View: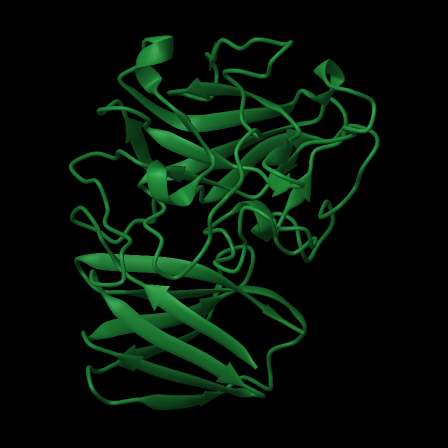
Length: 281
């Protein structure tokens, strides 16, 4: 049984996701290759984090997380600009985790941003302590988490004010484990979310727009409280299935024709949207 609770969020004018939506460029380093091949990549760094992760149980399978390799890097882009607001403007989720009595296993990432994908601005960091880098704070998953509230979501937040930018469309993450002890081989990337976007700070709490989506065997069960368009997309963003879902009218949809792999489940109307990954075993 696979159970999803898709929580829909307000959007500005058009339905746009706050999560990183595409991979612009990348170069993997040596040491680890987890999640670097299709069908896992690039879906494993796009869209939302798996809600089942926690501060002690991080994302760890190739469909959920990408190892960059030693000194590897990746550039992600967003559907709309990240803008400079109050506090952190975007959050990077790695798979750091807590063990023993509050000890953190972390693998660091240097972070840069750009408005045009050409000129880059790097966040300052301390190579001895890792301060200023991503990959230091565990993720707190769950269906009740507002991932645009870093006090709930965990992960490492970054403020565009620090690098003097009012907006950014691209985020570059580079493995920085060379600054750490030898057992730290490669940083992983789970997801990146924009906290502040043009005209909108999205609410990802369950009260915003709940769609219940349950998969039992080869049947997908949908029900919603608001009229939505529901889609199943492949890793390239191609729509493979689309249906209108009316409020209060549950649907049963066969999914036996879908092959093994990662898909995106998306529901939206003119005001709201959310997208989540689905791995069909």
